[in-house]
Every structure is written in C-alpha cells, then in structure tokens.
Image (cartoon, rainbow, N blue to C red; front, side, top):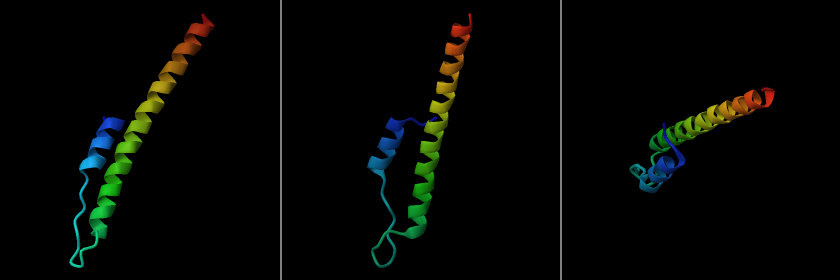
Length: 64
C-alpha cells in the first residue's frame, strides 16, 4: 500500500511526455493523474480501515 511519502516521491520525480508542439501530452497527463488518484484512494481507504478499527476497539472497551 502506498503512503503519503510514496506519493510525495512519485510527484517529485514526475516527468511528462511532450507532444510534437512541445506541450504536455494530454494522454500521458491523464494516465499520471489516474495513478496519483489511485494512490491517494488507497491511502484514504487504509486510513478509513484504521479509524474504524480504533473506533470498534474503543467501543468494545467502553462496553466492558
């Protein structure tokens, strides 16, 4: 699972392909945006699981 440090490293080394006119290639740009989005979603989902686990643990302690 990626973490925020992994995303930061990815963003720092990120380079875009250029088209014939020297502009950023749109297809390449969208592919990289999809990768970044996927990485952030995985980090978010992981955090959500941790929070639910901690909430359940606290609820179990409180009910004892």
